[in-house]
Amino acid sequence: MDSNTSLPLNVSGGTPATPAGLVVLDVFSYLMLVVTFVLGVLGNGLVIWVTGFRMTHTVTTISYLNLAVADFCFTSTLPFFIVTKALGGHWPFGWFLCKFVFTIVDINLFGSVFLIALIALDRCICVLHPVWAQNHRNVSLAKKVIVGPWVCALLLTLPVIIRVTTLSHPRAPGKTACTFDWSPWTENPAEKLKVAISMLMVRGIIRFIIGFSTPMSIVAICYGLIATKIHRQGLIKSSRPLRVLSFVVASFLLCWSPYQIAALIATVRIRELLLGMGKDLRIVLDVTSYVAFFNSCLNPMLYVFMGQDFRERLIHSLPASLERALSEDSAQTSDTGTNSTSAPAEAELQAM
Image (tube, rainbow, N blue to C red; front, side, top):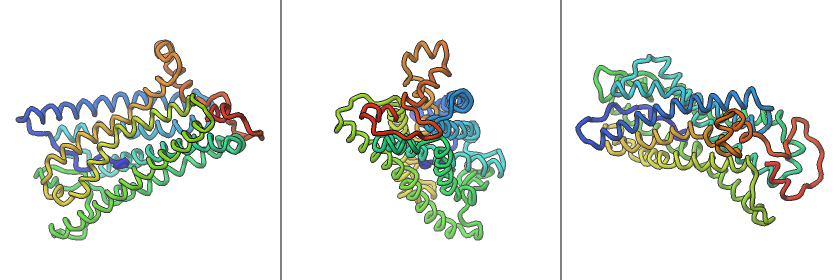
């Protein structure tokens, strides 16, 4: 995700009020941020409550609980950026919150894409190796494996933890920006620019490859293997967990791909962006990033809509809809694996 990937650290200031197109984009950006914050906090908070406290813990619920935590933590930071945008790019919250908020943003945006890849890998294992999955795929193992995406996310967030700080705003005298300081050892503008260009270009490439392309490639390979087995064995209907995952991945790609492409172009053109040029690209980055952030509030709605008779359940019991959408199917894997002989193909898919 830039973290897939990540929120631009130089949040653009208020757009000029003269051109009508920029006014529309400004209104759109505020609307997207507010809607994402409200729906993201409420929706993901509900998923955390249901999967964490109401449902029996399974491999599936643990995975989606962690995904909801990542989205909840990210959307909780959006008010900081709404205020900063309203103040024309000025960061009024101080050094500690600057570093803390952007660390939370990066860890959770990276964590979400890694978790999606892990869930896809889990689905693939259930289809290709159902006997192994029934004997070894348990809650104890899931709790250990789920630490992996978070550790990877933390490692990729180290540049933010180490180098993000508050500085004088480069394009707004008298204001403070929350951004990277790649060369604190020098005050020479030319040297600072040279170091920043090199570091941001390396960072952008790493984030695109590790934080987006690689996880999505894993998802694509897993889906290819699943589709091959389904086609070979003549199975048409997939299980509910696979349907939920399919919609989660589709929404992630639709929301994040435009930003990832824009961020890659920005990496190539990083010099002119640092020099205050490339205004059109900055606008594209802002708009596509807000669309990408909207993905963090979509998953809870997808979980509900994937349940059967979701309209009735939505009216009578929203938590019940979430429980049904996120539960394991009939061939549920318990914490203590049981020995089993090979099951029919239909049962293998039901174990997904």
